[in-house]
Image (cartoon, rainbow, N blue to C red):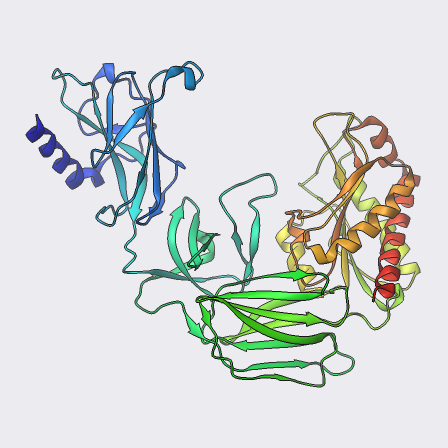
Length: 507
């Protein structure tokens, strides 16, 4: 029996690449005995996987109860008691830690099923998806192909997408240490991974050239008196990945560069600086270099990060000299539009119509005060969020307000709310919140860490206003009322002015 098993296992490893991958469930190398009742064999997640030693491989098999089920290397899967699986028997699950000796390359994973008797031979099934085990001795690298490549913390999803860790410039070199379906897992440091879409990375192939570099001298300078920006330039040798965030009390920008090791012997600061108060660095770990930029004003007005050659450049926006609407450029985003209708209530009036009317009134309100206004859309047209962000980053407004209508599964939920992602931009969302509540709306909250595309940019303060709930009959009657739409626009304008006044008072 053992000799037969050995021959079958050798056959499996040699010929598994010939398995029919287009099967709707599971594919066998020999006719499937009817009494095995194999419904599926799959990995969890059920997607193409690239793993490396130390990673956990999870497998599920649905078949007849009472079978013996093993992985290709005789590692057993265990049948879950029916009581633990909603009364359904025949579910086999198991986890296996990939070992350095394991070898699989773009192959369907073989699963060996045995009815525990001698009446049938072992039967080998294959997962529909493929698995590759990477060799850590031959690290795999790739280059980002877009200037707004994004990284996620993990594989979680909701209607807003996965939680974003940050964005990368083009041609940033990342080390790939895994894959799950449409996402590469990339190694940022010895203790931190991230996930990036496969479509945003061009593979380099195995390389002995590491993703590490020495930093050198810094230059910290500003534009002339009438300019809007200060610049912090750090030479790092190659385009390494990075993350960043804004801190408050004290007001500062923090950038972590992964794979950078300090060899900076001086930092030159110029008298042209207007917003940057001081800069310093820390070597947090052997492969994480931190840049700390202290700001002169308590309110951060934004920043952008990108590469010029192999120098990482942090462009720090100065606080506007005069905090009055007539001296500022305000961006107004009318949510949804065109084929993206948004939510709707019992009246059937779509969100896209309501947000456009409020945004158009808001534009008039701001222009009356002398502001220059940028609209992401001025008609019922389709503009996806990535295009809106591109337009805004190119226009570089002083701040952005995005107008939306809310909805909930329960009709009793109602009220106004505002949203921000970056803590430094919370004062704008709070000021807007305080003003729109004066329209006799219920309080739904000022909500932070919001993973929405138009709250992601760091280049300018931004906030989203959910004016009221279309799913609530009382709120909806307000939303479709032209007078309420005008009043909402007026209160949003007052919220912006409140933010400017409070910013001016902060010391």
